[in-house]
Image 1: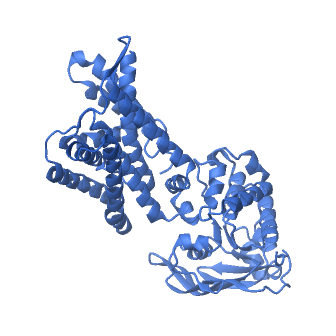
Image 2: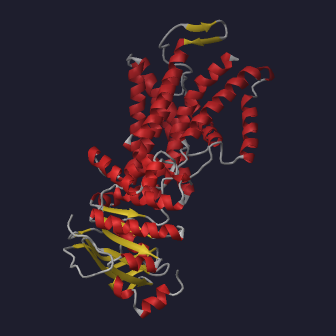
Length: 254
Length: 289
């Protein structure tokens, strides 16, 4: 593929802009969720969004996927305007999301869950190929292939929804709190899987996490958000040692 | 005994088809389609018109019901339910709309087809007599087999087709389905059309046996709701189970309780009340929603 996204450095100059937010504002009913947010993500990069509950991290993802309409500002993806397009279009253009709380289809088999990920694709052979690569990446899913998704453990479900997103063969992968509600031991596995995916598939990753330490350790750059605004940003390796970040986000965490 | 079972199966298959349509619409859109019985009646009249008035073969009439009701369902979803769901946050709005559509369809049926009981000539003659144990006219057997075939096709379609999978996904997690690129509007419309089509098909099937009249709509809706309450609303297996259970109960009741007068439905309702008090989510539960 093009270039591998190394995890700890920010030295490699990114080739082109994948995604950008320019002064984006978003409300829920009458409450501000995003107040003039500007962020960008380069091709091949892994970017983390950290911050407390309600800081606006998930709103950024919802704005990208078209689940929420933005009030003003502009979202561009590979040089084209993204906001205002229907959700199905956005998936088709190569953006896949792993939603918060996993959102598996509980009464469908692992197989059908994964196939739903490829819903917008019509290349039968290509879908089979991607399915095979997902099952190789997550062998547990192969073991549970015909089982109902609701019978999987939280960690397995998280693997499955990451696999489901990969089934779309995305260029940009959005992950919303993949460590939420997962046993600490498995958080490591998921972090490793994210690194491996960005390396092997050349996918750009936008990672939303409350587990700031995990997010900082596997991303190239990080934006810290608070009450709907970007309050701090920079290479993750630098932010890891930033006193403000330490005080605000890394304090009491594991 | 065999006779009761055979009657129950025959009736249950028709009922299950009706319940499937209702539960599909409910699970996809969270809409209780009170007009389901009227759609069934409309389908019966379409088949009657095509077969008895135009003199075309029964199968043409049946396909015409399916087509007319599918189009009607699609239009009702697109122009009535969709805007109401979009603008209103209250669930009662869609219930009122559904009830309104039921009355409206009753009026349309009255205008187009009149108030008379209608039927079509027998599609096959003869009676099966198996050793006096099961006596059943061939046309009932044919209609029963057709209904079971339709149920099986519906299950296969929902289980293995891309569209069926998308509808199941939509019913289980609307937001996640959207994130997979499922166009919610489009698939809600397909689902509604399919549900209405099933109601129309049963109308077309039963017009050959029991005939059809204007007054059958309301009671059919009530029965359909009974079935999905028994089986568990929004679950395919529940609708099928509910349909066959109600069919069996009717069949048993009509045979065994006939001596005590017309009390079958009294007993069924009383039983159901007790059952729902113990298990309000129905047999198969209501795992989503």
